[in-house]
Length: 225
Image (cartoon, rainbow, N blue to C red):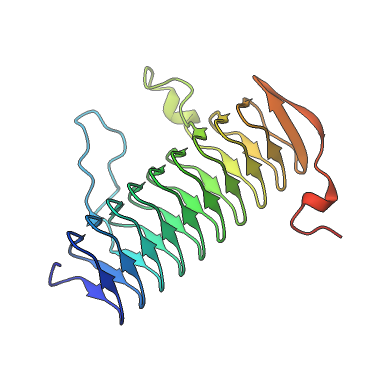
């Protein structure tokens, strides 16, 4: 552990965990074997993801559990009672709300917001600039994207942006969300769908490309009568 790191009371550090400078960890956390906390990303020569300045501390709230081999970068903040699964990667400048779950081998790229109580399941890919509200469910192997030009033109910077997934939405296994789409509150994206346009709140979208099929029943909504 680096001498400039700060651990709260009752933190459990398992074998091989690496805690770098500027890491602040709340009381009662568990840091899994071979996890790395506070890493500064190494970027390629042509990368456009360089931070605007020095990264702030990595902040981890109380009673979080960090899985074996997980990597959390400097400049991010996790709320209380979060779970980060084995082998997951959380890049810099990520904000995670209380009681969120980031599953095993999930990749969360830089400048992402994840709301409280949201669950992101195994092997999902959350691209840079994505916004995910509270109480969202992201099933295994979901892919989000943020660049329609795939790096070939300067014009792409004008339009680059990740999806916005609003409160209570659910995204099924293997779905693909294209850049800048908004998934409305309480919407349901069927497994394997390719979402190319905005989705109204409270509807089921299905297919490739996905189309509106029907309303989500009230009994399946968070705030059902």
